[in-house]
Amino acid sequence: MSARELIVLGTASQVPTRHRNHNGYLLRWDGEGLLFDPGEGTQRQMLRAGVAAHDIDRICVTHFHGDHSLGLAGVIQRINLDRVPHRVTAHYPASGQRFFERLRYATAYRETVALTEEPVAGDGAVLARTPAYTLEAARLSHPVESYGYRLIEPDGRRMLPERLAAFGVRGPDIGRLQRERALEIEGRTVTLEEVSEVRRGQRFAFIMDTRLCDGVSALAQGCDLLVIESTFLDEEEALAVEYGHLTAGQAARVAAGAGARHLVLTHFSQRYGDPSDFERQARAAGFEGQLTVAEDLMTVALPKRR
Image (cartoon, rainbow, N blue to C red):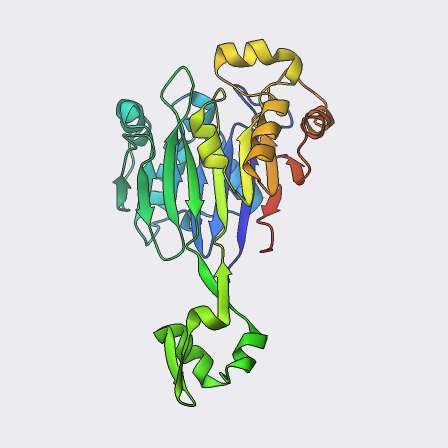
């Protein structure tokens, strides 16, 4: 299986700092690349992280505040400059169509790549189905229309060696049984279900600027890797609600309640200097799984299957 990993390009909210760029995240998933929320400076961060324009198959924008979308102009122009040979699809809130068009055509350049616009127009929308994943979107709660995204790998089957041996299935017959789902072995029919178990597909969710809402819980449910904003520490919860954001403790409680395995906190206000405060509050809120406080240019692998 190809690598499944998140490359963090930027982790700042509102404005970049000396140590944190505007948002930007590339998810590698079985040879495909999904770029989420390219803020200002994303193109340069891609260069520093070893990410090429050719790595991008989809661009997913949660909303049209500048720290999540100002990098679109440069990224789209770079895709065209490098003559990316495959089609690139862009997802973004339909209400922001005018912003997307302004960014796409911010300056003069030569279009050489087929860029497909597929705006998100409804809560719970299924945006794409591929052999590797289904891409979904859910409405979030922010002053401007905002959506989170989730990838779900289809469930598969895990063959059980002791069951295969018990039913006398061996060698090339194992592959035949996987393809055909039933096979005659020594005068009896053996089904795939008798010698295998469900292998649950992996799940990834990306949740940016939002208050607590139904969409947050739905996207996070059962995630192997949950990337979620935690703009404020818990002491500023009232401010977070006012401006449509989450605190570290709120994000961690969402992850714990959803059974997320690996929580990645990001999108930090420039008012904070010590990242360990976010980890401390997330642990105090009851999250016991793997926890990462995101830093620019780090790579986070999806957890191994259970």
